[in-house]
Length: 249
Ligand code: HEC
Image (cartoon, rainbow, N blue to C red):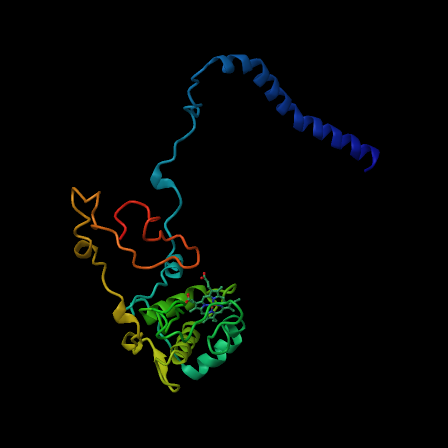
């Protein structure tokens, strides 16, 4: 920095700090007063500041913004865009955009999510939840892929590309044949195998006992019975003379 530039810089710096110092001096002289006021009311804005009306906040959303947000697809197909795509087109798109993470056949590379297979494993010790084994509706596949995949480049797929990829995923899960073309028109007819195992929330009937004004709070299930043992930790109380007193049988 040259000498004159240095002087200018210093002058500017002093000018900039002046109000701060003035403020600090004011705060210091004012401090005892504040400290001795035990329940000081929170500062109010000066009456001269205009208070915005709620209706003046923001602006109406544009048609284009609403259209960009409104991309959900429902089980009956409502919300699906125009378009179609074949299993074979989907296979190529999947290899190009998805297979690095999900494997060429949806088997999952490394620990990325598995997208195919797993049928009949839901009741096993290691259930594998996939589109074919678990998901209730094909619309969720379309919605999810269209909205969130490929991971890191979400919403880059066109509707036709999404139809094709969903067709390929359905084919990987043995739900549609290899020559299938998925479209907005035939979409609602695609049924996923696990759909019947989803049912409406039945708590008002199945938990009727519980939802009353005076729920049972003591000895509700009668005497306790050991039905399984914690084999590895060995914490299940033993029967016989060492068994703790109580209603264990
Ligand atoms: C960079 C890795 C990556 C790529 C590429 C990728 N995904 Fe994914 N995908 C993920 C991750 C991670 C999740 C889990 C995200 C979560 O649970 O929030 C996921 C989840 C999914 C799921 C839901 C799985 C489930 O059962 O919950 C589907 C379906 C899916 N991806 C499809 C695709 C498709 C189709 C493509 C290509 C267009 C794709 N993904 C590309 C990483 C990837």
